[in-house]
Image (cartoon, rainbow, N blue to C red):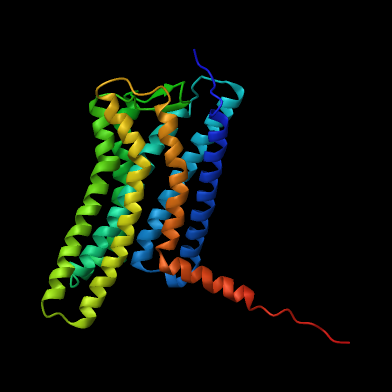
Length: 298
């Protein structure tokens, strides 16, 4: 029998607030990237891609959190026709969000290790990569959507792949989480070793400084990816747990209670680590502060 625990609605409200704040932030970032010409660069194109995916992912999280809140308030424990679609969109946007940081890592690596391969650093080539990742992310998860493997869990008020030892669970977790995160860390470590070797041999100062600057940018991206590890950790624990025994009754609620605030924190850190965004907002803020209101004398 389904019951409502005392902590359901307060957690639902808090998570809704975090997600809405995160969506507002990422909307501001997107508007800045679109309308500020100083942000029309290849690195900011990749950041804008992360923001756009983050916006769609946030909308999906908002839909999930609001649906859960409404169902908890009115004690409804039945699925709806959008439940499986929301789950499919959630898996697709989450995986694409993680892959977007991998694209940023690859770009930084190519700029340092293969600086003469300008074709790989061009806007056209990066756009092709972005389009391919979007297509692959949404096609990859079609398998279990059309095979009716996504089911409604009434205790957690969510449609998900069941937590148990299945091919689909491995299939989802590898592409969505383990592959993009591990590859991003691998690229970062390779670039660290490469820059150290550059420092030990005779290298033009400008080249070395540029390499260190790219490494600093990649380090920031890696910190963001570390946050992805933190917010996915409870989900990963319950998934591993399910391989041996039944996970806790409210495992999805607990896992998502970490994901929602982590989404907001990720948006804040994304701003903190993206200098063009900070510069653009500071310019607009200072411009507003410097506006002088004319006065008339009698």
